[in-house]
Each structure stands twice: as C-alpha cells, then as structure tokens.
Length: 312
Image 1 (cartoon, helix red, strand yellow):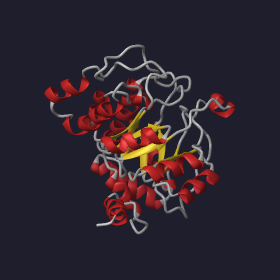
Image 2: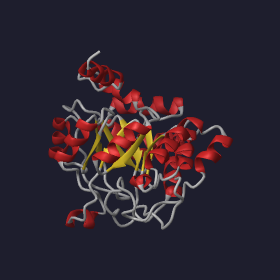
Image 3: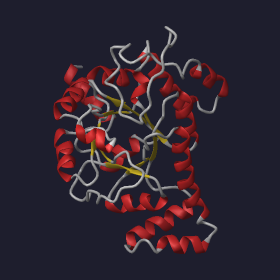
C-alpha cells in the first residue's frame, strides 16, 4: 500500500473525505477530545496522543484580541501548515457573525467551524449556516441559546469560556443546561414558557423530542479551564466531550500528559486508574520551559505555575 493510499484510508476512517455527510462527521466526534494548539509541533503531539481534533488559535497580543479577550482567527498559513502535518480533524475558529471568516475556514478545508467568543453574553447575530457544508460548533450558556444555535444550523455545542472563572463555572453551566431540559419533562408550565421563545414548527418539534428524551439533539462539549485528566473524566460522566486548554502542553513531557487526557476519557469510571492519571496533573513548566509551549495566554486564561517534576 502506497503512502497516498494509506493517507486516503485514514482520511476515510476519520470521516474527512468530501463525500462524508455532516451528520457522519459529527457522529464520529461524539464524546471526543479536542485541544487548543498554536503551532504544528503541538498539532502533531495531539495526533500522536490520540486526540479527536485540534483547534488552532492565535493568542498574539493584537489590539483586538486584548480588547475582546478573544483569540484571533488563526492565520490561514498556520491552518494549512497544520493540515499538511496531521490527519485528524481541524476546527477553525471564527468570530460570531463573521461570515467572511466562516467562508474562509470552509475554503481552507477546516473540518469544523467554531463560531464563538470568550464572553458571558453577546448580542451579535450569528452566521446563517445554510449553504455551508462544514459543520458548525457554537458556544452557549443557557438552554435557550442551545436551541437558538441549533435552529440556525449548529450541529455541535460547547460551553462558553468566561475569563477570570474556573472549571467549576464550566460544570455549573453544563449542569444548569441539562437540568433545565430534564425538569421540563415534568413541569408543563416551565415547558410552555420555554416554547414561547420559538415559533418555527421544526424547532418546536426538535425541542419537544429533546424534552421527551431528556437530552440535547446534538453533541455537547465542555470548554473553559479544562486543564487536567480529572476535568475530562468529569465531563465524560456528564456525557460531554471536552476541549482541552493549551496549558496542557506546558509540561516536560507533553506527549505523556496528553495521553493521560485521552486515557481519562475511557477510564473515567475507574477510580484506581484515575488516581494514576492524576498524579502531578496540577504541576506545569514555567512559560518558555518547553519547545511545545506556545505564546503567553491572554488575560483571564489558565496560566502555568512554576515548577513541575521531570517525569511529567
């Protein structure tokens, strides 16, 4: 088998071939692990560790990024370099409502488009997903936002990362969304009030089905301060995928640490194994201490602490 045949076979297995339907691509990412990367070294490490997808972000201190506490859309050159280095799916970030960035991401061949920003609330109009072949992921903080984004065409959802918060905030957001949905199954008054926010018959049918089943109709990912294998295990217990913070690369052995995240996704029901995966999980290399580490995170993002054992 030639190298091109091997590559085509792997792409087909990952659902990256052009004929793959949006649903097929999304289903293959269910409960998956994604990680923020800032260079091709990190992208290759993520693939070698067994991650489902990479999320290239640019945390350069540009005026817009500093004002919005939001990473820039990655340079197209960086995205192309990563796609040439790895075969796992790539999720390209675009700003809310920025249809030009969304079209650019699809043209570049991104497998997923992440339309979201680091903010508690936003009034920006989201991109209409009609006409796009690439599946969209959107950030949400309430159940109402979940179905608004689904109505617009989002096929994956994630919690919104809020600056100056922590993983407890991420868990609280997810639990509140899931509890609100499940409570409406036995609370007709709350259900009626919620349905008043929507008018399209298709959306109303989707909501009613979700209430009956007690779960959202699309995959949900925990995002925001997901920094340890324990965090991944907690999200899997809630039946969520996870988007790992870039701080995971600040290690003397980043590949080993990344593999621990992947193992936690499958061993989350085994406390004994989780103990082994969690040893030293809160210790990080100082900034600049590892070749895989990227630039300094934006304000409000997780920062490494000094120290860290050599075997981590």
